[in-house]
Length: 370
Ligand SMILES: [Mn+2]
Image 1 (cartoon, helix red, strand yellow):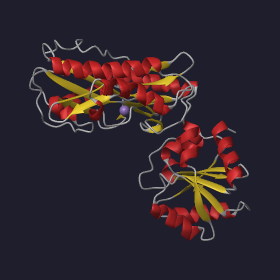
Image 2 (image 1 turned 180 degrees about the horizontal axis):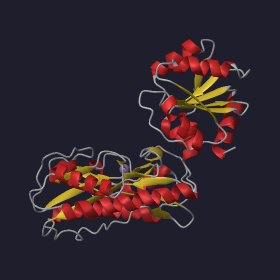
Image 3 (image 1 turned 135 degrees about the vertical axis):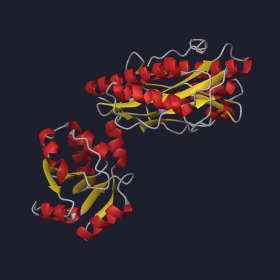
């Protein structure tokens, strides 16, 4: 039996849970190795306290799932069948208590819970294992780290393609299209999230959207992007200067963010809490007088999903540990003026932080692009 499953069963014993039902596709992949997006259909792992485990899939996924999973009995339903009835019939043969259920409250919809309640009216659904699963996903194994390094390589490639595409008059969306077109030609199917390319003032919103703004000389260009590769994500941000010479103001904002980024990358170590790491970067920015313009946490975990634990922020006393993967991404956003963010994701070990991305951060590297 795989280690995470054993840990889930231990937790079920502790909390007197009889059955665990997880329908988050990332959790299904984490536990079984089978990845699929079921859309509105039902895909779930079902684990009984006695160790019996099932993978329930739409019929169209059954064959692929059986080829991949071990330790799970795969069963499925047709679109014309009621999935909840099929689950009920299957579980009723197990001669096992189905009274107390563990679910992922951050994923299971209210509608699906109501379907479960009608199929199993005597049961209780009070045990939320969202946190347990997030904690199990925190420390990556060597094969996961290798996949994340590859995803990082493609993020660096995306930045190179984006940087080479910049010219006066090009629009943000044209740069996005060029990056994604080139990646698809090279076999990358999916980005981690909508690719962000923002020019000048548009980058002053941390969640700005690319549009038809045209690039002018002496503007910053903010790229925030990542790819999904072999089921694992990358995420990187660079703010390139496009023009001859940054103004003193642009340079000061940029160098402040870079210093915050570099100090956090250099000083992070095992045993430090997430909030202590956030403070290292935040103090640099606050000491320069830009504290109010850094209005988000320093970073987030990533893995199969681009946002998972650990959250690198004030108030999070989680101790950072070996093989945790997270972003370090300080920023300064001054509305209608300038926006700069610099982000790398990596993993931690006894030596320090190992970034999955290595695209240059020097403000002068790309300034002569025309
Ligand atoms: Mn990020």
